[in-house]
Image (cartoon, rainbow over all chains, first blue to last red; front, side):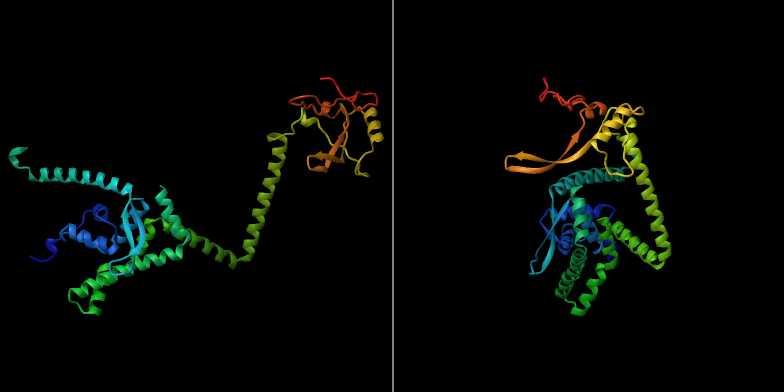
Length: 116
Length: 218
């Protein structure tokens, strides 16, 4: 089994949700967001590293994230992202929507000939 | 909505700073990644190369960040303006002709609007502004009071004639006397204009005669 088959492509729109979730666990700089997404997904999703930044800027533009320059763990000036109140609300709503989608998909894919 | 305007506005007014921050953010990402790769055992130059490769096309992602804030629209508008300015500078004759025709067009519009504004949209606040005429002598800047009386007595053209002149006056304010400019007007002034006071009484024809009472009864 090669490495490619163990990582899944990201579905469109899921990167924003993953970022919101990662940042909700505590303020992070861009690279930190990437690491945390890797952590919480068990490294199972393939993320283009550069694509993270347009997504972060879009989320800040929508008022879901707030930014602030701070000092990183290795003493570097870095831009930190933090979830806003609107971001928390959006994360809850999107999580609910995601769960509905997943359960519907799972049910659909588990259907057997005799059950329909 | 407020967040949208704030992020875009901040990027526009401090554009150089914004670009620097964006560049710094992406560079820092590469540095952090290279550090992690080094710790995993890669040689420093190789770690750096790999980190840069993993991030992908930096310019591409920067452009997408700009687009996320709607900066592209402003950038393109600015480029269009610069282009237009360059073209105009290159053909001064055409530019002059365009400017002159614009000036003439705007000027003519202003004149027509002023006339329509005075006649139709905002006529003088008197009873019959279209019947009001201003008489002036070609030889003298003003007409003497006796001349005015003669004109009024022999007038058959107009319903009536009024006269006024500007006059320096003293105004007693709380802080002392102050020089102000007032107007002396004939007694029929308000009658001819057909103006009514909201409260009280204006002077009328006959009030400017020698035997007129100093104060009228309300």
